Image (cartoon, rainbow, N blue to C red):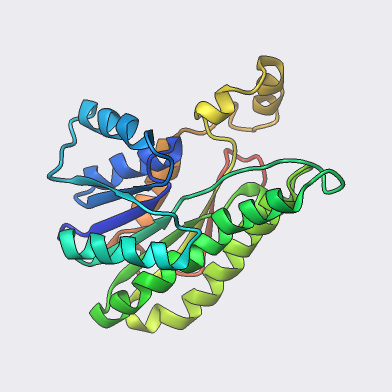
Length: 249
């Protein structure tokens, strides 16, 4: 397999790191995007501990909510490492509150990070993918973008928007050899969910038919498939990875 350059936004988070590891294991060169200073150190340490060095990994600072900053990051990556052939839009935040208590700042921050960033990054890589006749864009949505969730009007709206974006862009570029798909995780065992109170975690797990939370590797394995040549006839799809938490046609 040709080693392709893969950009993972939010690649230093729990799910993002799992994606990075799996894509490296599948023969790709990964670039993890980050925006919080200091978060890159933990990522670099974790990747090194897993046996991955600078020959297959890199780190890139960039605020993907900012169109111009995203463009500068993409240009710098491509100048240093080569054209981006795989884009995984994994950057995301939550600012939960009921709508009655939600501030405009919480709304706009979640929409910008979870949805606008997908436009920004895709816009800056799509032309090159089309010109080369091969590309993979994989957007991380959420089970809550499909079914909704109490206290998450901002997050659910953003993740539902990701699904609409995915399907619409898929129509535009499939004949150019570029596929666009989404992966919708359920509850995943990361630092964020480990911080949930034990009794609430038990209640959550009790409602998952698989009897456990997912792992970052569960998400990463789906992404690795969608990033491969084997998935060339799949586009505009949403792959649910939620242990049966929410099933739909």
